[in-house]
Amino acid sequence: MMHPFHKDRVGARQAFTLVEMLVAMAAMSVLFVMLSKAIDLTSKTISANSRKLNAVGQTRLFFDRLASDLAARPSRSDLGMVFTKDVGNDSFRFYSGVNGYGGARQVSSVGYRIQQTTAGRVYQLERGAEALDWGPAASPKQLVQFLPNLLPPPLASDLAYKVLAKGILRLEVSYLLNTGLMSTSANSDFSDVMAVFVAVGVMDVSTLQSMSNTHLQQLSNSLPDCVDGKDPLSCWSSAMAQTEFAKGVPQAAIQNLRIYQRAFYVH
Image 1 (cartoon, rainbow, N blue to C red):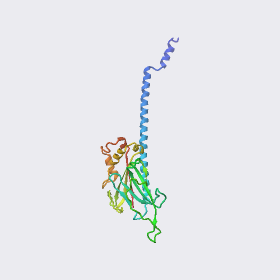
Image 2: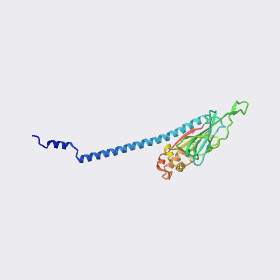
Image 3: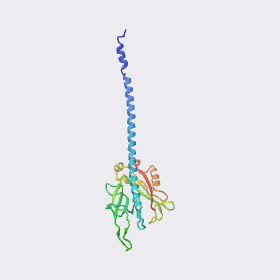
Image 4: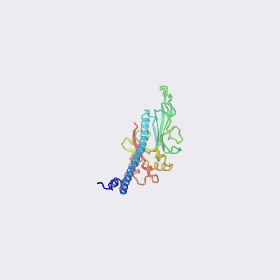
C-alpha cells in the first residue's frame, strides 16, 4: 500500500533547496570572476603585443630604409656624409643614388632627423630626399659631372622632409673606429670609422599621440647622449635601469618605450 504522502516526498527530494541554490550561485560567481580575469589578462597581453609589434615595425622600417639609402651611396670620395651630433637628437645627411621626393633623378641628398618644432609632427622621425641633377661637364674628358654642395644640417622648415616613423622620438649615433673603440667623434672623411651605430627610442603610435609635448620632450631627453667607450644602447639601458628615469612622465608611457640599435658599415 502506497503511503498517501509518498508522491509529495518524491517531488520534494527532486527540488533544489535554498542552500543548494546559494552554493550554485556562489560557484557560478567564482567561475564568472575567473573567466573575467582570464579575458582581461588575454586582452592586456594582446594589447601589449600589439604595441610591441607596432614599435618593432617602425624601427625595422627605419633601419631597412636607411640601409637601402646607404647602400646606394655613389663610390666617390667627394660625396661624404655629415653627422650632426647635438645635445639630444642627432641628425645626418649624405648623398645617395635614390630618387628624391622631387622626381626621378640620378642622385639625392638624403637625410634623417627627429622633428621637434613643427606642430602635429613633434618628436617623429623624418626622412628627407632632395632630388639633384648631374651638372655640366667640368672637363672635356667627362660627359657629365655631379658637383656636390656642402651638406648643412637639416632645417626645421625644410619641406624635403616627410614623416617616416611616427613613434620614433629619439635618434643617437656613435662610431665604431678601426681600432675597435666606440667614439662620439670621427674624421670628417670617416677614414677612421668601421661602422656607424644608430640607436632609436620608439613607442607605439597610439601611446605617443596620447602624450603631451612636454612629456615627450622629457622622455626623449631622459635617454642621454652617448659617451666615448660605450655604444648608445648601453648608455640608454643604464639610464632606464635608474629609478628616477623620466621622472614626471606617466609610468604607462615609460613601460611602452623601447630602444633598438643597428650597426651600419660605411666602407
